[in-house]
Structures are given as C-alpha cells and as structure tokens.
Length: 186
Image 1 (tube, rainbow, N blue to C red):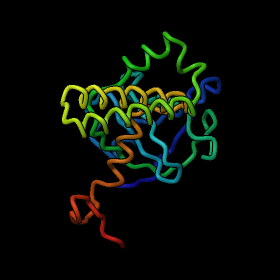
Image 2: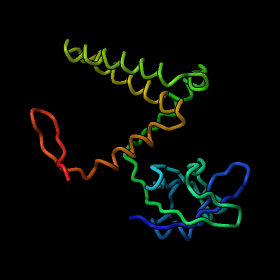
Image 3: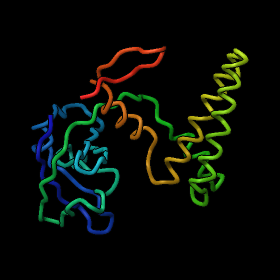
C-alpha cells in the first residue's frame, strides 16, 4: 500500500529524516518492530527507520535522495512511501567491514570491481561447464562479495538492491521458453 507520510528532520547536521509513530502506524503495526524499511517510489530509494524516544519517533538510517523535497526542522514534507518487504534476511555487513578494513570501498573504483565481477562470472561459467559443484559455490560466493563491494563503492547496500529488484519482479507473470523464463509483455 502506498501512502503519503510527513517527514521532518531531527537535526540539520545529519539530514536524516524522521517520522512520527502515529504516521507510521497508518502503514504498518509498529508494535515490537526493530526497524521498518520504506520505499520511495518516485526516487527508487529505500530508507530503514528505527524507533527512538520510546518509539514515538522513527529515525532514518540515511538521508533522502537529493532530488526529493527536503524537510526542515519543524517543517514537515509530505512524501509518498510504501512499506518495503525485505526478502533477504542475512546482512552483508561483514563483507563491507572486510572491504573497509582493506580500504577497498574508500578508494575502490566501480570499473575495476565490474571487471572483477566479470572474472568471477567466467569462473562460474567454467564451473558449470566442468560440472564442478565446489567451484560453482565458490564462484557464486565470490560474485556476491564483489557485488557487495561494487554497491558500497557507489553508496548502496546490496541488500537494498536485491530487495528492490525482488519487489519489482515478485508479481511478474510469464512462462518458460527454451529453459528460460520469459515475462509476459503488458
């Protein structure tokens, strides 16, 4: 369900949006929730909110996208949101920590990470051709690590990317043609 929610700022310094629990309860039962992810369809952006001040206010984990109307302290902005249904339960934070400790995210380059991804895709193809299950699992894992780093270099979490993609395709209809899923054209 999509709904208009009022966003404010708690601090002009960090620019992270806040939402009153009374606003959020219009979308979802917040009782006992540790966090709630909201999807901003106009900006293809996800922000995860956590409760604070006894659950009265929920604070975002990052700023609104630059192209969105920006709230001010005490001056709310109405933005369209919908509850984001995450499907990925395991966080990839340990991979990001590993990459940060090696300065990969801070000084890494999206182009070189993409080339690394293609190298790992080649290893995946080779494992399929050789029917080597150990190499198959290793190549898939390596690709997730590289994708996690690539997303982080560009300022994204791979979990958000996966969840956004899933929410786009979850209701897609189609059929198998020559061992490939082909979506129905609208």
